[in-house]
Image 1 (cartoon, rainbow, N blue to C red):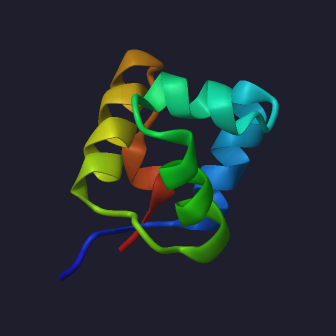
Image 2 (cartoon, rainbow, N blue to C red):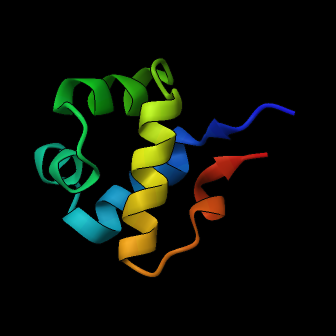
Length: 71
């Protein structure tokens, strides 16, 4: 089983938490804005750095990271 992030669910999270601002959301996650933009718009680059960043972000904000994965 391969764990993959869902770009569409991540976009919804970004819209809800950061008013759709890529730079703000990337700072919150601790990733490069270009990397985040590429992933959210093409689906490329959703590797372990982004997954672990999302998990840490969700833990800090009392969210369930599993809601943003395609299992």
